[in-house]
Length: 192
Image (cartoon, rainbow, N blue to C red; front, side, top):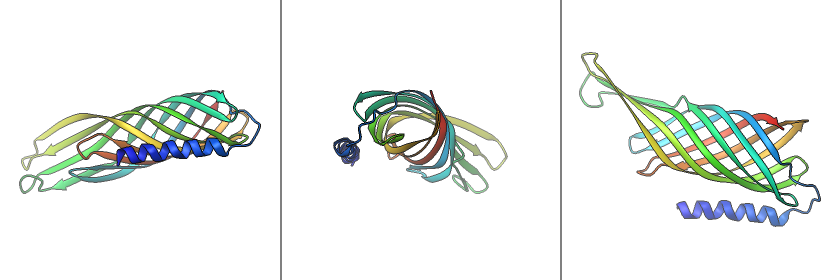
């Protein structure tokens, strides 16, 4: 399934490149943005949904007429959390919470109209998950774990004024051991 997802994203990007007939050039340069949206973690211990919020820095390069590639780094946080009472013994509570999510991503796509970019993305992600166990006597134990994985996705970015842009993006992340993540993100930022 992982290979099929990557092949699908690559195919969509190539189909978009082939379909472009406009004569404008894709806008290159640095960008900064704030973004937020829906975050869902899936793991062996269940599913947790919450709100994602963060910032991103990136740079796009023109590589051909209407075709661009770029890199970006993101730092995100999530409110996704799940608690279970009686997890080990009666009267206890186990809570698992998503913490920060760092990513280093490459993206490539086409400018389908002046100021409108359609793109596929892929790269590395590192998520932090925290667990808190409260024993029946009130004693609290905390533990954190870093999860390294890969991310793919697709998005659309629209210029909305001089130096401003908005975007909508879907991201899928896989950390191994049945730990996956789905995110739908909307962003607003500055393009320099």
